[in-house]
Length: 109
Length: 111
Image 1 (spheres, each protein chain N blue to C red):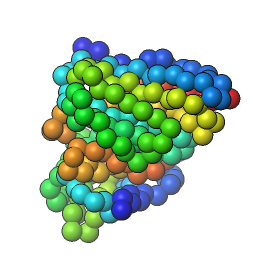
Image 2 (cartoon, chains in turn blue, purple; image 1 turned 30 degrees about the vertical axis):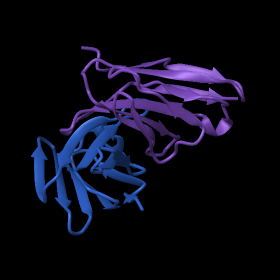
Image 3 (cartoon, chains in turn red, yellow; image 1 turned 90 degrees about the horizontal axis):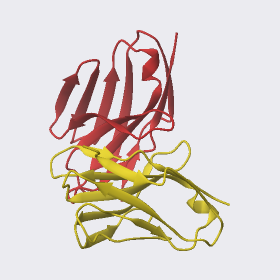
Image 4 (tube, each protein chain N blue to C red; image 1 turned 60 degrees about the vertical axis):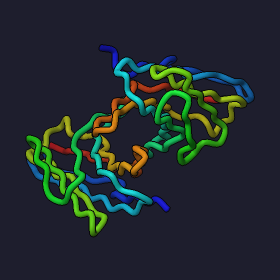
């Protein structure tokens, strides 16, 4: 079966660092994506991992361990505009993209 | 370059009515998808297509139908609308490499 788990909600302070975890069990694996979604808007692409290790992209980094079925998204130097939902998604071999329920991040001053 | 275009943006349906949500992409992508997103939840895959003439069920296909007669278009049909289909619907497209492009969504309410 398919199962993608991430925390429902997180809070953090402006300027701090936050790590959002994602664990997955899927019938196939061909890459893991992180998307950001502001309320009322479409998801926007943040990062992609297909090999183990860390991918860094400005203030955002994403890590993958395929053997553990685990990923995290690291957000540094948090800004108020980072308040959003963060969606972990696994791509299966037929190019289907399956999403977790998302983590709502609230950044406070 | 319009990307993925969804129409309409908003719609209110009465129980039992039918409608078609339109989705068009101009990137010549082979893969197209329909998702629904309930309030506070992630996206659930309804149907997807790997190319013109080929469609397959996703996680929550019941109550919906799709067709893919051209590469560009991937309409989603609701035959007998039910309150449980109140949701935001997103269409997306992709190629073999990473990079899924999402439309701006259709907010549907069934009353």
